[in-house]
Amino acid sequence: MEDAVFVGGGGPSYGEKQHLRLGYANRHGLIAGATGTGKTVTLQILAEGFSQAGVPVFMADVKGDLSGLAKAGSADHKLHAPFMERCGKIGFEDFAYAGFPVCFWDLYGAQGHPVRTTIAEMGPLLLARLLDLSEAQEGILNIAFRLADEEGMPLLDLNDLRAMLVWIGENRGDLSLRYGNISVASVGAIQRRLLVLEEEGGAGFFGEPALELADLLRVGPDGRGQVNILAADKLMAAPRLYATFLLWLLSELFEDLPEVGDPDKPRLVFFFDEAHLLFDGAPRALVDKVEQVARLIRSKGVGVYFITQSPDDIPEDILGQLGNRVQHALRAFTARDRKALRLASETYRENPAFDIETAIREVGVGEAVTSFLEKKGVPGMAQRTLVRPPSSQLGPIEAAEREAVVLASDLRAKYAQAVDRRSAYEMLKARAEKAAAEAAEAERAEEEMEAREREYRAGRRYTGKRVSRSTSGASTRRDRQGESFGEAMGKMVMKELTGTTGRKIVRGILGGLFKAR
Image 1 (cartoon, rainbow, N blue to C red):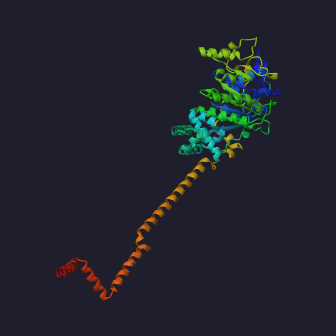
Image 2: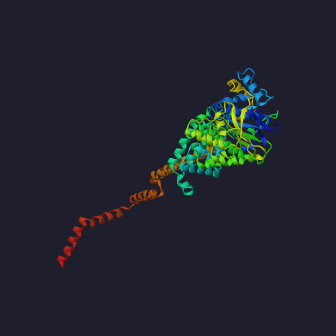
């Protein structure tokens, strides 16, 4: 079938070809099974089939094995003979070894092109999930985003968000009147979470140039879709960052891609390995968002395939939307395992030829119980399917070979060098420097004013008023020098008369007069 991806052979002798129809590939899917049952090989052969059909693929390489997609398999491989035997059993006549157009990506920039996004593009909901914030702390984060938008300050990297939080803390009195109480302790808690994120290597994830979705949707000149492989072996040490990044990527695809309805084939197929990390401890609001994206992104021509160990790792509302199923073996060692096995078997369309629950328990490595959507989107009958061998190399390629692929990519020049343009951090820093300069200028002006005041007070003896008093005294002295001798004698006599001697003379004269009378 030219309009389908060949998966393997089913039926009693595995001679009935099992296909995943491209027209229904955007109805999402599930690849489940215990460790070591062949999930990675199934993921690899689906990626090959989609690429061959001209459909770009994005997948996370948790164990490093998927890098082999970049290199053709070899007849010298130890499994070559078993592969040829399997091809004959399932009727895969045109099998041939081949490599595929691979583009390597890495959030840390070590094993592929750096993957970046901005704080603003991540948004407060996903960022709060990434930082594991409380409700109060998430509220402050929303305030930071609102203020950055109102003030025209782009939030691009962690420095921008830190600076905005510091500004909020310093102005919390005024802001609390508009947005409610802003606790210094909550602001500090967010800052500490940002520090932990930076220590986990998240600082390099936020910045520019940001990833452009068009670079994931490329189709080569030969008509094959680009296989985008995200190096996730080290990223798994920060599972919250891993899950948040993939959810962000899904959200960006949902928001940016136009509606296409049900195309003949998907525009992109997205494989989400270790899918349980997305839902472990996730708040209900986040689960609802994943469900919304999974339900609506189908009309954007994007198929989402979850890879996990057990179907019960996926919430029921999302599990019910996964129309294409590949169920590898589940081991029922505990009561919980048996319950999961029973629930997994109940999600398949029954096949009278075998018991599905028993088949899921007994299928071997490289074998699975499959069910793919048929015409009009009807679930196909469950089949025990022997999965076809991969055309590309089974297992990882050498580090030097990987580096050669990265260096040869035309995207290297675009993403290799980080760009730090003017954003919230620089704007707030400029504001602070301007305020500091204005404060220093005001202080200098005040000091100059105080110095002039001190000089003025110290120089008051030279003012006109003091000069006037001094001139008056000098004039008096000059007047005294210019007095006549008679005037001086008259004043002296009057002084004597008003003194003690004068009073005696007056009493003597008056006494003599009264005696004479």
